[in-house]
Length: 112
Image (tube, rainbow, N blue to C red; front, side):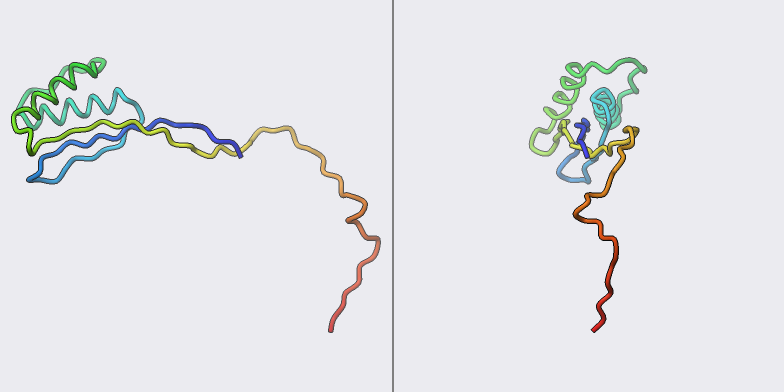
């Protein structure tokens, strides 16, 4: 069985006086977009128009939100590389022939 590396992104946003928001994303763009949405909700800002997420701009926004209370606010986007087992499929079938030393013409049952 072979392995393929898959990327996953976790997002953690929170404050010490409440439950953190933790989410897992399949793309970096989705993780950054979710961080932008979370920070905007917490600040009472209007949602950002749908377009490609700019990680640098979102990080600046999140850092500005955190700077308002740096002792209790936090955020983190982390990349993970996960090995996923991939079965070998669609291979050409191989004929398996028994080894002559393992084949017996007769068999004996011993009860006793």
